[in-house]
Image (cartoon, rainbow, N blue to C red; front, side):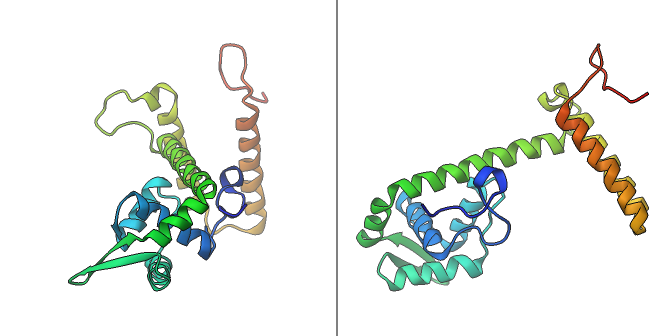
Length: 194
């Protein structure tokens, strides 16, 4: 089955190009079957459904729309400089004939969007208005502050020598391993090597 490329997010998108041309055209048709849209609305829809992970450029969307129009799978209503794209009977048949792929792909977009939202929640930390956020109750505010401290520390050391880069990498690798293991002492305090 075609669909998403690569491996990020458990078999999801890879970096770079996310869809091949045929799959992108199919998903555009599926979105147009929901409602007519302008090209920029399609871009925003991809962005929203993927939580900002996939934002196709105009240089990707508009050629796909032109192809779909030229092959009779969409029709265009022009109003000034704007074009509103609608799916045709031929385009709807293509969507219907590939319904399983469409559903899997749209579900994957939604799943990635949910994962991106959770990542943002962790890294954004608490609310700026001083209220206790659910993220602070789970320690995300602490993680947010620590992440900023780490970023500052790395910036203060840059540029570093090869030896210093290896030392920093070893520290970060140990920290990542400790996070993954999740080891703690009795009483919930992080385990240390003292």
